[in-house]
Length: 257
Ligand SMILES: C[S@@+](CC[C@H](N)C(=O)[O-])C[C@H]1O[C@@H](n2cnc3c(N)ncnc32)[C@H](O)[C@@H]1O
Figure 1: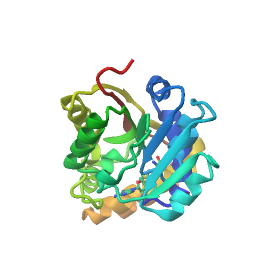
Figure 2 (figure 1 turned 90 degrees about the vertical axis):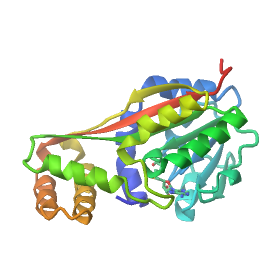
Figure 3 (figure 1 turned 45 degrees about the vertical axis):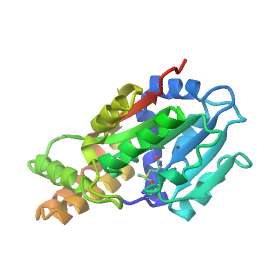
Figure 4 (figure 1 turned 60 degrees about the horizontal axis):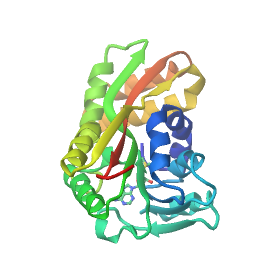
């Protein structure tokens, strides 16, 4: 599962349905009456579309990604109110924090190593900025009906998620727990919520794409049965279900009203 616009648009309805509603509402509130939101790893603008509906129409956005094509698409979502920044997130000093009232990310923390999250927490603590990070994968996969190799596949996939995604070994399924701890240690008041995908028979295209990505990752980790498992699961997508665990986090700096 890369970051193609097609994959991101396929997953967006599941992401929107999954987000913890109370944390989303609280994030919108702490953005203040004249929100300026900095979205890290914005993709095509999923967070802009979802959080934007909870913000005043005047909200301004700074969109950060290292993929210019995705950035261009995201910017069309808030004409005249979005500034794009083609940046590599490894360079946290380059983040345009000036005037920002809320920093956001979605489906990003599980790609990142612990030291990057620590450096981000330090940077946002120094700037006194709240951070809303949605949809960090937590390693849980539950299929109905089950297949004999589901557990092995999940283990191989989770192992793959801990690989280097560009900034060093990623936290993968440990990202949500670790990020909460890191932000607490940096002095933030951290609230968390669960945001699992619940994919049913009516979402077969997402289900099939998900299965394909999981099988490919498990195969890359050397699990020989991954291909057969993927073909079986894809064939069952129209009459089976899967829960994929995610967590949301809202980290508030001291003194947030
Ligand atoms: C899984 S996608 C999530 C996109 C979007 N936030 C969403 O929820 O649909 C991760 C995004 O982070 C971006 N990204 C990953 N590593 C990055 C890096 N080192 N610097 C900048 N952007 C990065 C990718 O290009 C991609 O758009």
